[in-house]
Length: 127
Image 1 (spheres, rainbow, N blue to C red):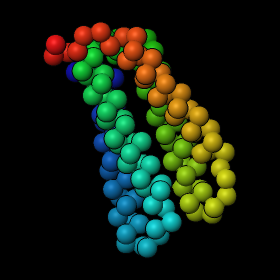
Image 2: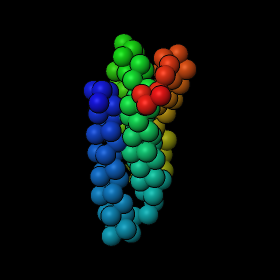
Image 3: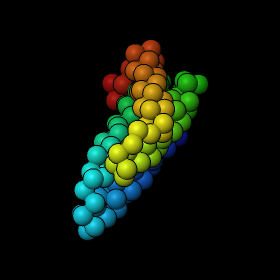
Image 4: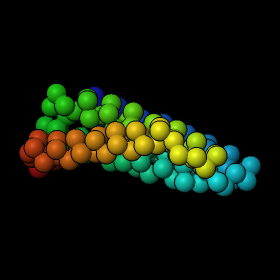
């Protein structure tokens, strides 16, 4: 298994555990105003990170690109900033620079994944 694949899946699983803990707190405390933050943690954090890891596993040539590690860092930093901003908005309803910057950085990370897939995917690992 490639290092980038392993990193993405581990980080995805960390997002899953964090999202589950956060969700349990939401349910127990009644702070349902944070439901959108919880959803973003699980969908963009766990689901997309794990999916990206599986793409790197299925198409190992993508992970051999020098851009792969940058794509990983950019996407995960973007998600972290986005989630912080989302929690701030859910908490007090005010716009957050974290959300704005995090959204743009996350989109850049996803666009880099699109580029890597289109340019470097080649043959699948099991083809």
